[in-house]
Length: 106
Length: 116
Image (tube, rainbow over all chains, first blue to last red; front, side, top):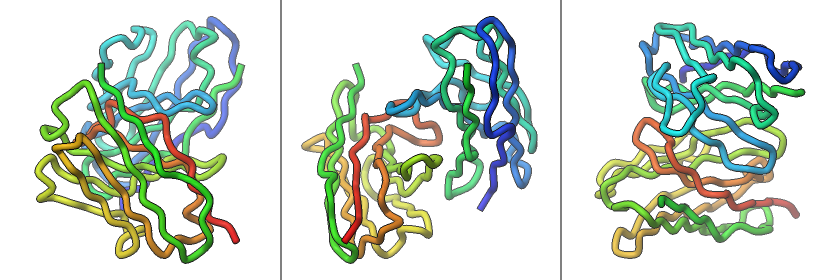
């Protein structure tokens, strides 16, 4: 199975800050990465697909980048509603696998 | 608008069975792959299985292969997960998600607790 290693596992920041979460795949997965946001007690929400494609309705302060084995999610100008847990997910090969998550705390 | 609603979770003893359902609306159900994904308490996300729109393609993660069975009824816009030989480690919130390679819509989840 392809392992997705996210870092950091947790992160503290202030409203208005910019933060970057990274995700490293155990093998080349081209650009086959999605990013999700999960608020406490809620279902995950798709933010970015295909490494960098912003989903409709997702604010432009979210940006995904990367290819091959190294990927990142950058949030610029953090808003209170952005404090949540973020997951990367690969879809190059089955089984689909997720990173362990990054909890972003205020 | 797309809606996915899971049901069927609950408390079950180890070795027992449970059948989860997911009712879809707001899109042409038969056109889409559907997946089940779970999340153990305080843990990350684990993809379990998917089924193609016509049910001719099915895949399972090793952790549930041979114990869980995914199915669908397109006439009822419903997705199912039959879970047998349940273990304590199957305790989790179970989500259905519209998929292919991207899980673009998720249900609210249903909680399964396996405990004696």
